[in-house]
Image: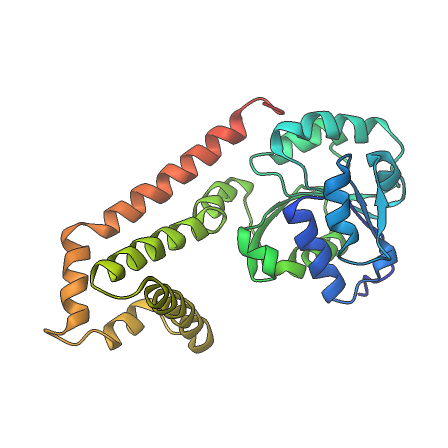
Amino acid sequence: MTFENLTIGLIGGGNMARALVRGLLHAGHPAGRIQVADPDPAQLEQVVALHAGLGIHAENREVARTADVLVLAVKPQLMAGVAQQLAAGPRRAGQLILSVAAGITLDSLRGWFGAATPLVRVMPNQPATIGAGISGLAASASVGEAERQVAQYVASSTGQAVWLQDESLMDAVTAVSGSGPAYFYLLMEHMERAAVELGLPAELAAALTRETALGAARLVIETKAEPGRLRAAVTSPGGTTAAALRVFEAAKLDAIVRQALAAARDRSAELGRAPAGK
């Protein structure tokens, strides 16, 4: 199945919308088949800078009227108003709608666009802005196989894309990958500070920490080895790594991580139960 003839419209020109535009352009999608709407001229300027051939609009309806795929990339608190406007206006028949707004459930989307509209909820993460993200996708019952392939095409333009059998798992995805980058940043921050306290220059501490983080992630991905096996391989009995890991174990790092992810999952669920647009 080819997708180059699809017109992909994005409502919103913020960071995630621009990440999708960059990804689609990199995948070879024609710039003229990508339309973006945002009422903020400053946001549109940043979109225009990506490619001169993009379709740029100040009015959402102009994009919704012609798009085969409509990506809702607006802040969750604005979604109700935007969705109601789009649902009331002219839209292309059979239009597939993707939402990347955190906490906006398929039920809310069905309430605005109707049960017959094919709807996909997408949970991306921050590394999508450099094409290294991973997104979780959940579809409404009205989404067929062809539409799933289209949604996969759009979402995977910013990295990996995985489907969830049950939308309720989206809260766990949010806790692991949506919020996950911040956990690694926090560990890196602490490692850099501690390295400086050990006497290393700040620039060297940063380089050692960041390249180590990158190398460890690449090693797991490229070798497909279990993290636990790689950890064991670098941990000699009575050695330096073992000494450090004993401190983590004494502090019950495993319990801290479980509690942190559960808190993020629970907050995601709470936000999803809030009245739409709140």
